[in-house]
Length: 88
Image (tube, rainbow, N blue to C red; front, top):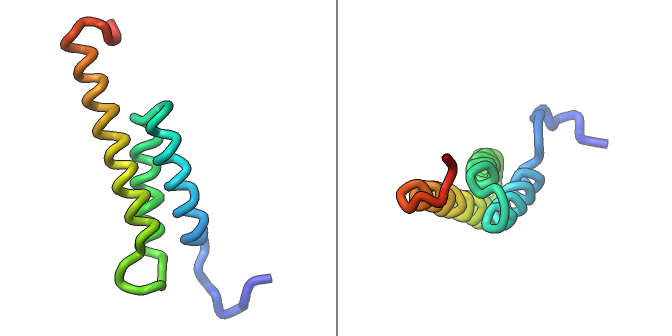
């Protein structure tokens, strides 16, 4: 049971970090254009909720990997467009 003094609602920072890291790693293999931004959002939300000090490392890793996923996916889509082998 949770403590009655804890009035926060929503996901815990550890859950958000875990979800962000899983989405970031999976985004390198499939659906990077979708999973990358999800990892960024989860990492940012976990950064705002953590009380561990000034440098939340794992949420920052989720944000950076999610941003890389998104950037790589956008470059891949743009590159396929210009070479003619992408979507019609």
